[in-house]
Image (cartoon, rainbow, N blue to C red; front, side, top):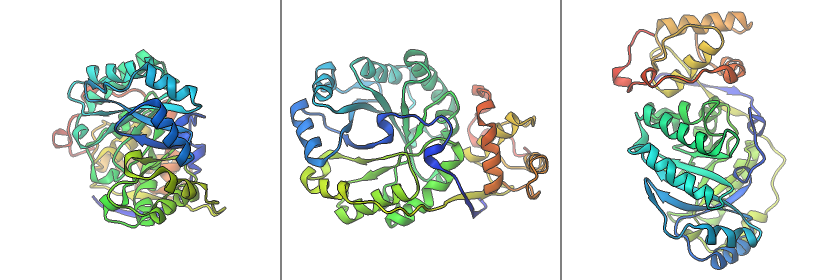
Length: 348
């Protein structure tokens, strides 16, 4: 993939369709649910009021997640979100596990979808449709996906984060796994995630021996980039009393600019597919295939000319910003519009 970086100024918390929900605050993930009394006590020690509690793995429900657990946590004054790990193998069954968790009292839903979903556009559409039919268009759902979008060109970000999809983008900015500093991990992740036009609430790590100083840096970076909130994975990897002072530290007033990718002809991936959908919403008639060929470059140039931008056929920061204004007009793509990249035409 050929790209350079430019500065794109976005208010991430002011992205389209921002919601006031537990997904936009400060939360801790719970991978091994225990009693509501124990979890409520640990949340109080850590100083958080929202827990993301595991409710399922694929099509298998988490036995400990039930209405009694959720009710006990909510009675203790906590907000409770269900989170499920999903594979896209049996999307309807996986969606039903998530729906059951909401019916048990969860106030929002977090979908952890990672490499297993690469190339599964049809499964993603089926999964999203099932959830939205069951839960309605406004129920808060977040995608906790891989932060490094450009390294996962066949992951269906553009389906999960489409206008009729999930409201919040929650990239897993696990700096140790990425082999980067906290600041470097944010720089590599926030800009490219911003092209989907959703509020960003990054997920940080408590596992893998991270220091409390690093956790504090993560919290500071989330504030500096103007994100709509953040969460930390997971409660079992930390001492709640030790975490509390870090989460109470004053935050700086500094706000950083978001660095978005400039995507050039020859690139292929979901970010190109998403740009093609935005271009079509703005009046183009492109085949949506995910390859940045001559036809797409001409469509970008025409769009730039109409919007009084520098005309060079590149998807740069200013072009992305203008394209996002067409976001609400994106029509739902068909399953056939999203074959694996290896099967897509190379002329678009």
